[in-house]
Length: 111
Image: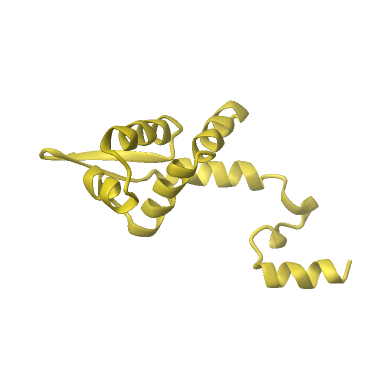
């Protein structure tokens, strides 16, 4: 992933509503726009704008089924962002990159 793509993805997630949409899709899988709007209590035009931004950043994808449009996480796009962020992680100690906070406390206390 190029830095400009990472910036675009992170910028799209930096808005509270878009972050909520993304996290809901991570938990729920695919949802139609109407269900997203209802669950998050967001006006449909506003939601449409946020979905467009997340889609343009490569973090979500859409699929039409009749008149409904279903949205879900674009796993390859999300994976690329995570890989980019953790590429040089933990000063060459990759086992620390995804350790739990409890495990990190043990490591930090011994350093």
